Amino acid sequence: GNHPHHHHHHHHRANTTTLALRVLSIAPRILEIPKFLSPVEVQHLLDLATGPSVSMEPSTVSSSGDVSVRGATKPDARSSTGGWIHREHDVVVDAVFRRAADLMGVEEELFRDGAARDDDDYGDREDEHPNRLPTNHRIVEAMQLLRYGPGEEYAAHHDFVYPSVNNRYQPRRFATMLLYLTGEGDFLDERGVRRRFSSSADSSSNSSSSSSSSPPERSPLRGGETVFPRAITTQFHDGVKVKPQSGKAVLFYNVLPDGNMDDLSQHAGGKVESGVKYLANIWVWDPIIN
Image 1 (spheres, rainbow, N blue to C red):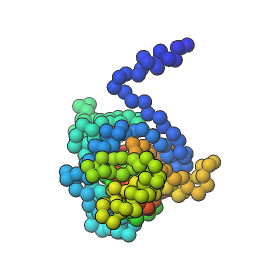
Image 2: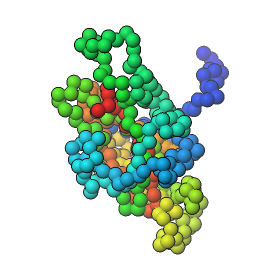
Image 3: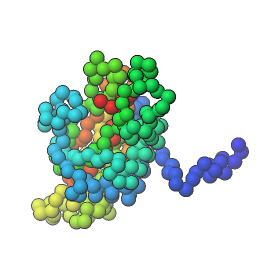
Image 4: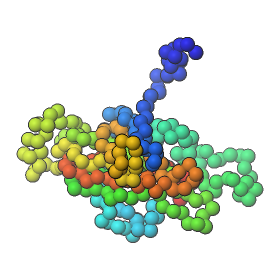
């Protein structure tokens, strides 16, 4: 008891990471985790986002609110390109999902298909066990990789949609995690490696001379902050803004503890002024995925 130093080392194993969480807002519930991803993990996700294995297509917002409906879209609300990767893609992506589950206090098995609900104690008939969930599907969506180029943004929106009143399980997006891959001042070099400009003089000369010929990735990122316009804190009375920072995660909850949707969780992707914002997001559903 009197040796917190030893106590700490007793629990801290070589393969664990200590994450620092900062509360940005309690209405809505927003947490910031500065070094959630290591620089190596960040670069790996950037390689996926810029490489041939993930097809990045123009992002859409479905007018029906149904995640699976790709056709009916409101193209004006969102200007970005995106692609999807499952946790089974490789060990790095798997580790990110595992850490996300750990951060949220969710059983990691729930982020995979089948494992958590194959319990032999259950009978085959659902009516014998009315609380058994009718699915073996994971409660998390594939990770979405997003690219916002100059001038692109995402208008204020909610991540949840109201499930049909007839759906007994009322599935909805419960929590959202944003993972920033490029931060303010970051750019990608010719080989796609993330770098930072050392000085402001350096960046201004570079962007002016090369903007005509080279891709926007070569210019340092400016703008593209995440905004929660309805958040009110003692510090901010007109919304909370989060600046992109490489490796940082933002976790926020779309659902309140009482089960109601949190209208205050509305958020927007601010316009990218220069450079390119790369980020990934992870959506977790409750109690099942639709």
